[in-house]
Image 1 (tube, rainbow, N blue to C red):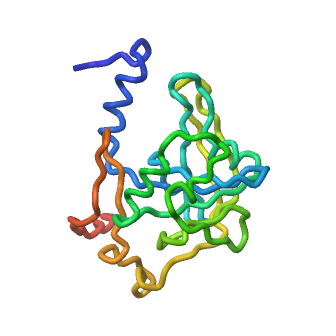
Image 2: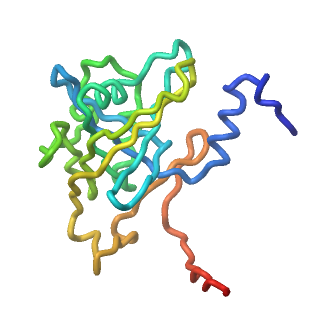
Length: 205
């Protein structure tokens, strides 16, 4: 099969694209609106940007039927802040619950039975049940496409980190304790339970 994406509908290729780019980490983004309404939603278009200073990005899409933006995007744009909470196997059902499309005045923390813990620097709360929470300040927002199915890139600097002691050993994460999950295509998710190691090759001069 070959597809000329200049003329192809985006919906059909999205299913291929999201099934090919796997596994994807999940940013469980908590924000608060200018009116003080808390929002919590997962985003699997998410990754690191750089280490010094530490930055990450997540990509909120626009609704496919009318191009409206997500509450997380609007809150981050208005307040300049957000929190990335990390999803474990034990939190999978609650994370999935917060992916539901609800009215902007609904608090997803309450809806999913989660504890909203205060942050040190940003105004948005963090998920107390998550073992890792990163408080971030927005440094840049790039609106890639404003069409239905389009999206943006939200880049933020990590200004404060909360990491539970039991998932750490010698400054590294113990994945067997942390037990993160990732997103695959469609309704599928993956567990980080089957890993292998390779040494980085030496530079040949």
